[in-house]
Length: 308
Ligand code: NAP
Image (cartoon, rainbow, N blue to C red; front, side):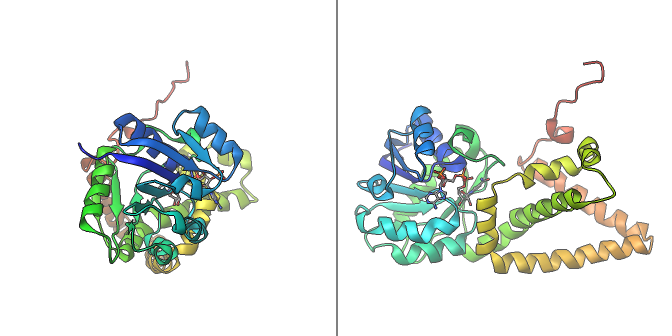
């Protein structure tokens, strides 16, 4: 494949930025990889891991001469960072991001972009509950969707180049408008995170069930929520603050459906419960068939027998 950039500048090098750096190295998609990071610790770790050639304190130094710039920081940082780097962006550079909300990325970065760059927001729908440069891995994007949300003025050639870049890292690429992205992700990602944060918080607040009981019997379902609820608080705070409308819209529907379930339980309406639970089981089957999940029971966890 002919996707090769001269200089890739990653603004922020946590889980996502460092996974991009690793994958770009592995697939030789850039001659030079540099990053900007806020703390000296993060810059040191990125250099020690050998995933970047240079790490800068000032994002302007990272983007100078870069033909691909990727924002890999929490969404709340975008506007200030975009304003900072705008004056030094190279002619013809592609500027993109990996943020989980796209309308907000357009609003925060778009107005600062000079006309001589191509700005195309993006979102790799891939991640884990871990943070920081040591948490990344090159295969994170393999088989996962990357959604690109071009804006008015994004050139076709740049969109093709960026699509090829993500495809070369193993992603399946989809083009969408930013508002639709935010609605789809509200139900598939943001609300599930909110539910996980809420249920784990509720369990923590209970007075008549002890903490040790919650932990001891967590395999009953609770444990699977705790993985999601361990996700980075800064990133997720920013997701909810910046996708407020779509999340509130989906949350309204969720509450109505929850009320229907509550009513079915109160009325001992087993038929309704059975019908809903059968429908949801079929959805999991579809996710497995689409290759988005392992068919192994209990996510393929290894269960040690009591004799081990
Ligand atoms: P992360 O591991 O916490 O890394 C965040 C990076 O941003 C770090 O390098 C951090 O630098 C830097 N940073 C934070 N605040 C900053 C500021 N005020 N100024 C400059 N740099 C700052 O986060 P991540 O999981 O990679 O997430 C990054 C982006 O990817 C977010 O926009 C998120 O929405 C998106 N995303 C995440 C996932 C996921 O599952 N995690 C999936 C898809 C998309 P220091 O380490 O020096 O503080």
